[in-house]
Image (cartoon, rainbow, N blue to C red; front, side, top):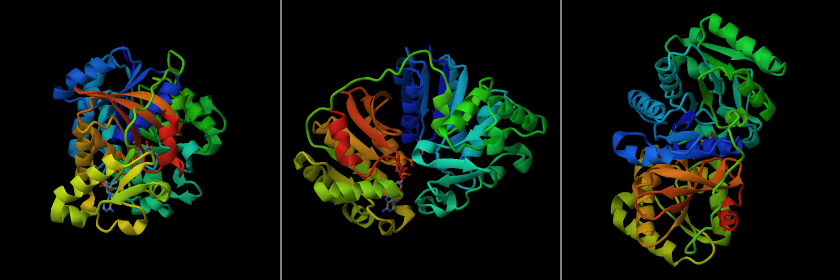
Length: 415
Ligand SMILES: Nc1ncnc2c1ncn2[C@@H]1O[C@H](COP(=O)(O)OP(=O)(O)O)[C@@H](O)[C@H]1O
Ligand SMILES: O=C(O)[C@@H](O)C(=O)COP(=O)(O)O
């Protein structure tokens, strides 16, 4: 019976959290959606897991829709027996100004009838740190990092309190900060600070974190809270009932295909690196609008004919490639169509780059749940996708995660 239930706002965020929970000793399953028609997949998948992560595609949904699907997921997790909950969003706090991190966190907190939760996006192993409430990506404040150009959620402020306040009901009265000097004093000091913030009326407490040790301190300080929110790294301090159990599997043969819909800086470098030793095809929105079928069938044909080196179907290899964010949906749809045709032709392993892109691909493939395999880079692992047909080996890569050679190395490390 699962005890911990997580609600992730995109698929790569869900798999990222699953990796951390597994390392923390939770036998973890990722399920896609928790709506009624998915119930069969998901309830079966939850059996035997200690933690279940529901992967939504809600990060850029209209606020009301994001809240509704998140509350549906919460209700499903409670039916599956979960007693503690985790709202997972991006370590770069990807959100439009209207939401959805604040509205979803508030809706879940109120549905659980809880008084306070923490806001902890930090992921130090991937360079995401929070100091005095400001989120940094490496050495750059968030609003000076490439995330300021994200096609869907451009981040133009690094101050988490300023980002959150417009998103929660009581604005500045609903938020508070526990700064790093308090965090450095240990769990009791953090617990006291969160208690004081709650007494002052705040429900969403941003907590600084510069190191994994700070997140472990926070996890210890909040072991009495039924709801946590953050990136994946906060989960490293949760204590699961068993050792790290990962499914060992060997990647099947066949073409090594990467489908990249991410426009993030790390992915751009990975695309360029893979193209330097392999081959690929760039899909352009204009060409897709002119003749969608021609672009898709050409990509499938070339991908199927590719040899050992990875074949990369990509939308962006440099910042200049992102011409119009309105092109995003047709690119997602094309990559999902290409994935479906490759799998129909026998492909049983795909590397997909991008959270929204991964969501579009796995929904098109009818994947209902995912089991964790070997971790290849921090926050990036091979998974086994379960569906009505044959299982599919998938690596669903967060846009800004992974080393530059990942698209080439991943196939060796999954073998
Ligand atoms: N060249 C481009 N022009 C417009 N939109 C793009 C381009 N490349 C990618 N996109 C879109 O940007 C979005 C990237 O989101 P996502 O897949 O979550 O990547 P990440 O994980 O990097 O955020 C997708 O909707 C994708 O279709
Ligand atoms: O926390 C993170 O950074 C990731 O888990 C994540 O959410 C990344 O989302 P995408 O950039 O959309 O892949």
